[in-house]
Length: 443
Image 1 (cartoon, one colour):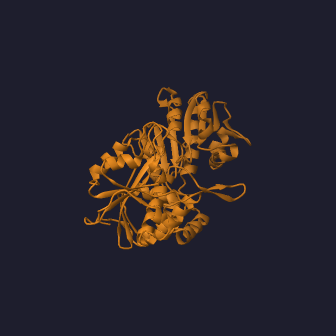
Image 2 (image 1 turned 45 degrees about the horizontal axis):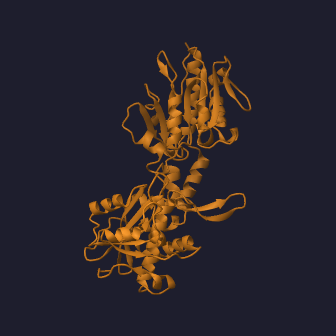
Image 3 (image 1 turned 90 degrees about the vertical axis):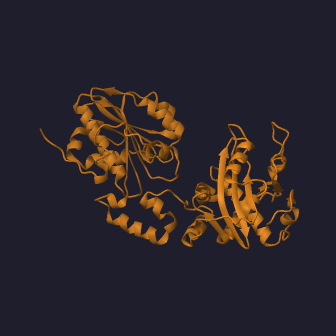
């Protein structure tokens, strides 16, 4: 019997040892995880074929418009590294298959073609690379298709990804689970015994020139800011200055809740509150809250559990806070007033309102202190909030309306109000038009 020796990064030995339903690796650039999983898929195909088992190895990515976007080239290079795998597989321009006809690779994009995967025949192994952005719906569709099994084997899911969002569908399913049949490991550049010199030079450049994204790109950390995000540099500077940490409330000053209205129902956007205080010329941001599709009572219940009661807190609403609900003849303004809160409605700043909020936040950032723990999700949103671009024309199309925009809009409202407060409340038409609904609280 001839024995083949396969070199793996030491951290992945346990991942591929023993039985499992899911095997995976997450981490930053240059770790070798993609090449390792490509090679091990070919090894697993070799083992299946030599055991007389026929079927396909499916390689998926979130987006795949053509084979150029697939893992095909990684598979080819991994096989070409091992002469004994080259002897077993036939490699063409658009295919990889075993010479005995038992094993064939297929490639699919999960974003647009997930339903077609259900009709694929006999999947022995599915490897999803660059899996961070795969939706929970896609996972829920894909995983039940991996049902083939036989004597001593069953179909497995393999997953590799560079984490971006804490709490993403991939993060929740495969990293934050105690299930012993899901074997995943963290793998970064220092764990790659063949880390190339050209990547080391690039890593050092990123460390020196792009510190705001370095940990995400190279160290497998969640992205705290996204390159090109509106507040990327400001968040990096705030962290470097120690302004993201523990922030305590002043018991003598008013708590202020700045709102982005989401509504209720299945198609509702997020409802957001930033809770802060104005202390001299500083803004202390104490808390962040976000919920989707919940009634106002749910938001008020959260506020009560935090101690944000009407005698301590005022609420600031965007201009649509005075708009009547399409189902109930109420407004957020009237409902919050009935609940006992002082309410201020900030009038619409016109067609450039979004950009005005962004610029106000940029100006205010040096004066803001953030509670790291309670504002973690909100800071993640601010770090992601970015401009939508027409790549073909290389022009900006304004802020991208996505999961991050609701927290960013509420923070922008806070910035507009804070600047008016620091100017005494009447330094602009917007300040003069602020409609106060309750008075007598310390500010």
